[in-house]
Structure formats: structure tokens, C-alpha cells
Image 1: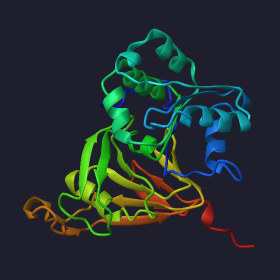
Image 2 (image 1 turned 60 degrees about the horizontal axis):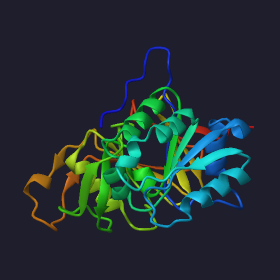
Image 3 (image 1 turned 45 degrees about the vertical axis):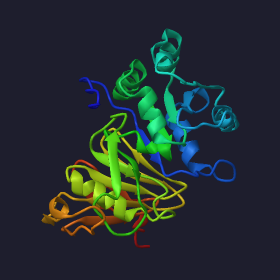
Image 4 (image 1 turned 90 degrees about the vertical axis):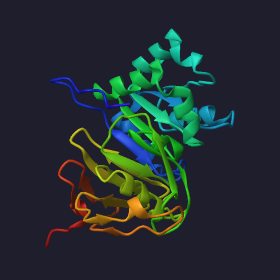
Length: 280
């Protein structure tokens, strides 16, 4: 599940977790930017609707991307782990300039794709420049550490979140989606109490984190991105808390970012970016 190594002279593709419920018709800024990164009219996008149990999810996103000007887009269904070893499907993914995971249940993605040739290939392709995006459940699985499920609430509590291995494009962050809409601050903070190395990224709906090859996170969309940084964590009571007990965490850093603001996952520094207007 470790990220694939970026070879000398190569540049990793963008990693784009989306908080779910992204605008698809009136002002599809997030999906439009993903299309442009993948080549605009020349983009070749593979949609993976594995997380969803709805038969029309893949075809629906095919139509959305065609309306955004992409002529070469195809959804690939993986119903069994054996499907993940089929040569034709692997070759189709290898030709793509962009890979898009839909929403649904993130455990469907990891149990079907985890440890297969498809998962390995997606990591390898991202390491050589292919862009990978995912919305809702498709966002949760992008990192090495994934929130499988958990409870709502604003306070961290022991046992309020369960972690599982994700796709492993990066080990730098843990994603939580539908963040403000479903009151998930507590469970993301709890996840970081287990692993203070990672950075917590809470994505509101219709909001994405465009994470470039230089590990700079750029916010796109109508909501906000909550970044929780535990690098300076001074104290945690997680080791002594019983199931359901509140957890004391001292020294967490929290940033609220909107469109125009940035956060560097390497230096762990936030910036107002384009939000600062020059004096006239």
C-alpha cells in the first residue's frame, strides 16, 4: 500500500479528493478543472464506479464528462477480484490520462481492488503523471490510511472511527468527506490521534483539494477544506480512554481554507494565496 516511487525525471500526477455532491451542471468548476488537467478535449478518462451499487453511476459520469468536452471516456466495472487481473481492463487504465473514482461505499473499492493488479497499476500510473480523482467514497480511498466508517460529532472520542488500508497513492494525509454537512470534525481528529504523522483533510461537499506534484494543496469549489495538523501534538489521552470516552488532544493545528488558499503538505504551512488582494 506504499506510494509508488517517482522516478528521476518524472513528475507525479495530481491527486484530487472531492468532498462529494460536486456541482455537475450549472458551475462544474471541480470536474472542469480535472478535465483540463487531463488534456481538455484530448483527455482520456476512465471512470471507476466500483464504490456504487447503482447500475447507472458509471454511464452517468460518462455523460457528464462528455458534456464537458471529453470524447474519450469509459467506465470500467469491477464486480469480482478476478476482473482486476483481466489484461484488457489493465490496458485500458494504462492508456488513460485521468482516472476518476465515484462515490458509494469505500469498503467496496478496497475489498474488490485492494492488493490487485489494478490497484498497483493506478499507483504506478499516478507516479508517472496520470491524474487520479475521487469523490466522496472515491476520495476516502486515495490515501494509504482510510477512514472506513465512524460516528458524527464535533469531539474526538475513543472508538468513534475505524481505519482501514486505502489505495495508497500517498501516506501524507487522511481524508474525510461531506465534512461540515455531516459534522465529522471529531472522527477526523480521532483518526489523527491514532497516527499523528498524517495530516487530516476534511472536505465539504462541492469542494476539492487539488494536490499537485509539489505537494501543495489548492482549494477548488464552493465550500471549505479543514486541515488538521498534529505535527506539534503535545499530549493525547487516547491510550487511556475507554470506548466512547472523549479524548484530550493538545497542540493540534487547524486551518480553514477556501478557494484561493493553499496548504503545503511537505512544509505543513498554510497560505492565503490569491485571497490577499494587492493595494491599489
